[in-house]
Amino acid sequence: MPSVQKLKWIFYCVLFATSFRSADTQGAAAANETVSYHQRAALGIKRLQAWYDPATGLYKTTGWWNSANAITTLADYTQVTGDKQYADVFPTTLSAAQHKSAGFLNDYYDDEGWWALAWIDVYDITRDPRYLHMSASIFEDMAKGWDTNCSGGIWWSKERKYKNAISNELFLSVAAHLLTREKNKKLQAHYLDWANREWEWFSHTGMINSDHLINDGLDAQCANNHRTTWSYNQGVILGGLSELYTRTHDSSLLAQASSIVAATLTSPILVDAHGILHDPCEPNCGGDGTQFKGIFARNLALLYHVSPSPRYKTFLLTNAESIWAGMKPPDYGIGVTWTAPYGTIDASTQSSGDDALIAAASVSGITK
Image 1 (cartoon, helix red, strand yellow):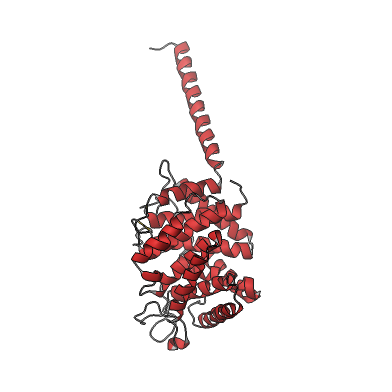
Image 2 (cartoon, rainbow, N blue to C red):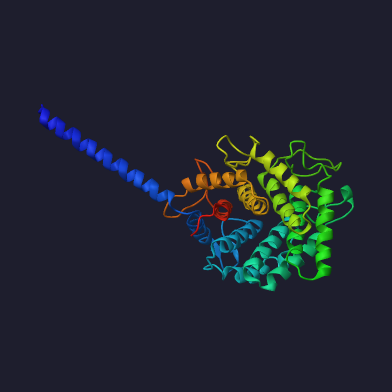
């Protein structure tokens, strides 16, 4: 049987070891907290670029429109951080991806809108007119989708069977973004006319429901179909309204954007009790829903820079912190959900989470 002295010695050894482990854990946690949002975004982007295929200009493990969003994510990262190590990606994709779809056009107007916005973001960091011209060319094809069915708006696809929110939100956002970058007065008037026409129509369709959330689209009677309120439908509109406001200074645009954000952040369908964004499809969101949340975060940051609100900033930082908690070395992958269990990881989930990290970096004020 051990002596009292030996028991005391064992006790103090255990106490010392426990204290050492505790201090070590605390030190690791403290070190983790010192990683800036810029650095976190850099780790996330590095993982995303592991999926990039220069032969196609696209991202493996995900789809065509998702790759457009990944290019947008990369462009935003470059702009926010000043890190230009991935600059060769943009001309590579501009050239290579056209082998899949000439002029970045296909049968879906929303797909076209994602690429148009991607090239505008690339233009913003390169000032290379090729990218702005590509976006303008895509926009003109989107405009061909407008007709008098349901009194206006563009169709979701060239089959002309469904008018939905996302294609029209993208049409508004592309028009507004081209408006604020175009120098030619005639073209400015062209884009302003389309942006105003689209918003006038959209705001009266009923797709913005009584809860100030945007449903998926219109039914055969041109009324709100009351289908899912996806996070990206609450997001893209924010970017469009914010950008249009910078030219028109119409305060009603920001008021509408603010009401949509307020409804989103208090929706139990979209935001949990801890303030983390979700989509109703989680954890099984197929190839599309995995992209949605980052699009909301990206556009909320755009609104924040036009109309700052502590609530927007807190929301973006809270989500970025939750994402970071799940990013484990050495890969720093980001799953489909932004809380544990984080779920499957691919280029879509990664770029979506990266959007949130970049948005947090853009509003945080933390330097590199």
